[in-house]
Image 1: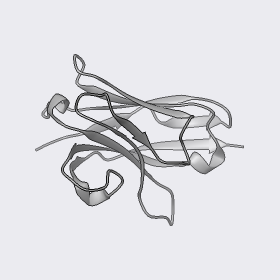
Image 2 (image 1 turned 90 degrees about the horizontal axis):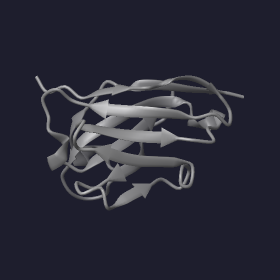
Image 3 (image 1 turned 60 degrees about the vertical axis):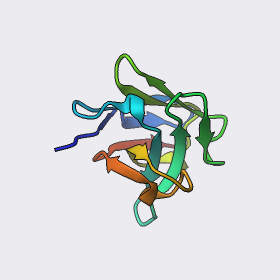
Image 4 (image 1 turned 90 degrees about the vertical axis):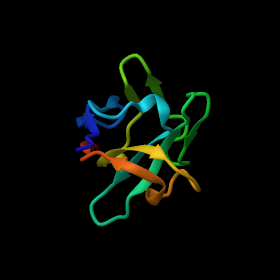
Length: 124
């Protein structure tokens, strides 16, 4: 069973930082473009960030641009999402998505594998 695992979520005050990690014991992320998504209660899942297989291309949703940074470490088979200057509106379950297939990077249907998510809560 393919398993993608996110970690690093938690409770933080507004203005603080968190770093999310995404890894797998079965998938080799090096061959995949990856995405980060989030879903707040009562809202649809939305794309947060994308990183290409090479890592040379990174894309961000307007709401997080300039505050979040996506990166990957091939040796550790891990993708990261560094989140700085966090705001209460960033509160959501954050998901890692692996194996971007085609189309818009923010489309949930464009990815093959998903993790179970890690909760991020930002207090005001």
